Image (cartoon, rainbow, N blue to C red; front, side, top):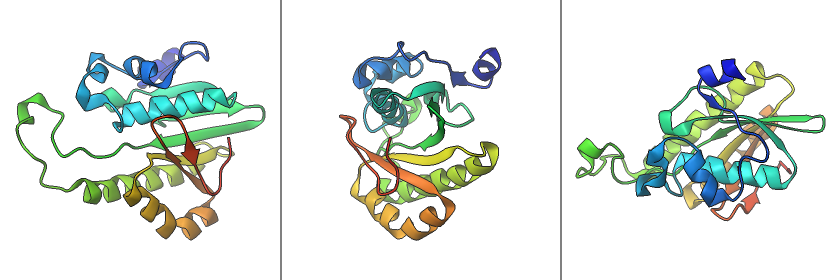
Length: 181
């Protein structure tokens, strides 16, 4: 666990988290409590997904600290003989999180940026198949129409690669056409 922590993973016991919104504060630095780090920020999506997994009796073995952009798989979990790795993305904001640029508006539209983030998540989900053989590979995204459209347009390729997409709501309700917890 010491080595995983040094690599940027947050080690959590199954009892350490309770309540998705309360877990957001535990997801990283003090910045997680400010408005820039609320739903659908990546750390908040990750916290809600971890709670949903725990509700379905998954044991969370590691999470990456999204507030510091730690490298590695965002969520690793086990349940019986099943193991999963999940790449989590949030929904892009219209403004910058960096306080020095707070008054600026991003030039890239959230829908365009979401397409880039979706592509990054898909690439990482493919790489997970090699870095963690035998693991179920998941992409976890907040449930937005743009992500639903991209999910539909990549369905055949994801199915062929055995990569599952989970669309998640802030209350933990999730939808996937190929994965069940």
